[in-house]
Length: 288
Ligand code: NAP
Image 1 (cartoon, rainbow, N blue to C red):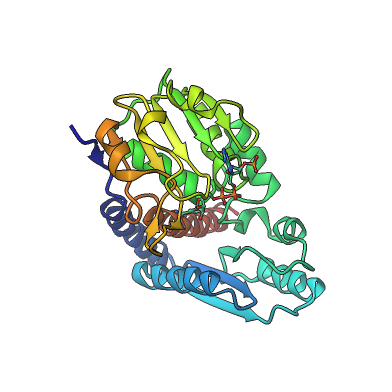
Image 2: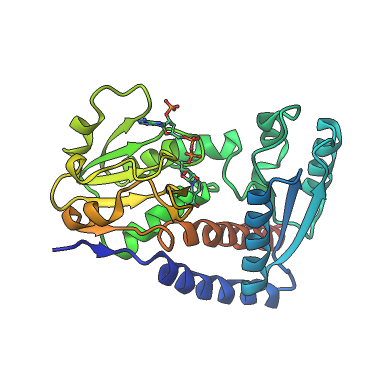
């Protein structure tokens, strides 16, 4: 029997409704949650992502400001803008759309964002908090994955989880969050020998590789939970994930589709983090 589809669109809609209520509560206390997004250069995909973030903010009532700069902007100028936004009381979340042009250091940019406004969860302070299980901002895509698994009441305790991919924004944090839920986690990457040996034993597989239809049915155990993070184009230019969806679905117990799985959750968790940041600031204001 084909695995159950995990409907990321429906989950995102539900969570956005809850976020909207939280936004209204914060507004009732005189604060409008605000997100600043910095976009450098003219990469069409980045422009689309930023437009979707702006749309998401509007939908839930978050104030958003988009700062667009030409690719030639100097690193110093960009860092100055971030410092200015760090001090801006109207802004509760700052996001710099990646990737950046080669002459700008991404790590310098991330390090300059105040950890209190780092709603992407990329700052080393927030990464460190995640590692030791302290409250901070969690990176949006892995956080969205955990919300999807939670919503389906998928038991992670003691389960074998395999994460394919070890990027700082998806693979690595996804594995850490699974570990926090007591899964037994294995990371696979481009240097992994006999990848299918690992995936065939997995109760849960997170595929974050960036290669169209990479994970095949023969690599998957009967009844596995499959989370497909990939966003690729297939041979016909159609959007597809890292999982060979049709065949893998036949063996899976649960599976996320692409599109409509993990994708809609990423921006939703960004909105969520922004409201939590605004709430934290309101709380601090009251207690000071
Ligand atoms: P990335 O930085 O390119 O990382 C890809 C990872 O896959 C790396 O760790 C790499 O290993 C590993 N890998 C590459 N080829 C492999 C192979 N043949 N066997 C095993 N592992 C292999 O990508 P990312 O940023 O994590 O993104 C992954 C995918 O998710 C992309 O398709 C991206 O578009 C998508 N994505 C989607 C969302 C969303 O909201 N839905 C958000 C972010 C990303 P090494 O470390 O050894 O190089």
